[in-house]
Image 1 (cartoon, rainbow, N blue to C red):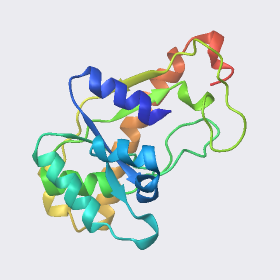
Image 2: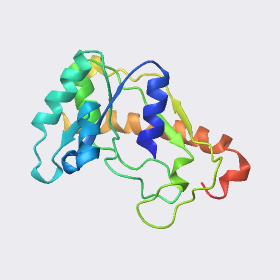
Image 3: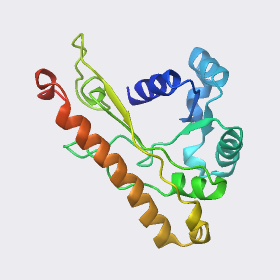
Length: 180
């Protein structure tokens, strides 16, 4: 549910989100047409080909579009739902384009749709989304090939996301908290 709630928040801010999506989804008749029409970015995970999606993301960012990247690359597996260790792609993209990263977190959707186990479709559940201040890395562009520096910058992104998640979780309505 996070992509839907994140997309809604971005659209409400008068922007159009571009997401990375598994290339296989583009071959499903109705879903594929919708993804292509919405100009989402296909990713072929099993091939390791990062060039085409990277070019598409860079082009989108240079055209002042919003590219949504989940730095963990998967649904969190932590029981407290806090962010796990992130991958360096978002930071590398920020360094390559000079575009800052705006961290965005959501809370409440984790109880609705789960990869494993039963979710709750109880009517009225709030899903909260919060964006933090932009993170600028342009002053560290000289560190673009330094793996340790990339990991450190990625840790800054994850820390910003964790702060947002902790705030949302702490303020989330008590009536729903036991299921969140």
